[in-house]
Image 1 (cartoon, one colour):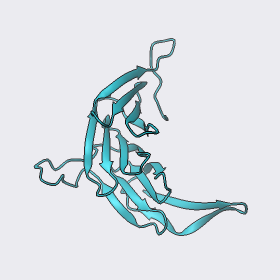
Image 2: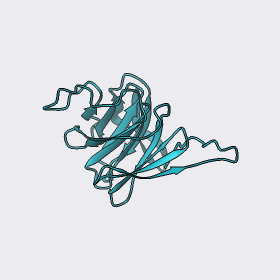
Image 3: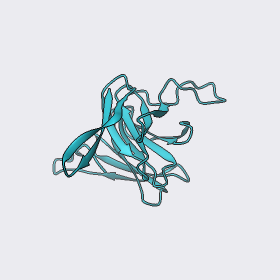
Length: 177
């Protein structure tokens, strides 16, 4: 999986030098810039999220299931299935990922450690969208079953579940927040 940065100006899109971002083993599903524009997060079908330095295209952090959590016997801290959505917190300190494993994860943008895992979406659904509130105290996640969950980044609890339903009672998949 590859991501590419482009500079867009009045003359049209022009590829920046050293901006082919190669590091994923499968298709890139989502990208997000940090609030200051210095970093880019990518999420892919290979269960990983990568944070890149925009200026030179270098890999800053890899967040995947194979990186152990320090001081823990648990060797799986990342998503067990593909990463479908990525977002940065408003201060750029946290990367939020949503996965095909129905989990939402908060990661340190400084060292790539998993800070918290939110479990609450139906196991048979993929989390397709994640977003942070402007003050950074809430994370919203949307899944294929039409549910949007609102999570607290301070108590780490699910604050609300919103169910989108059509006339036939089936919720449409949430693809963006």
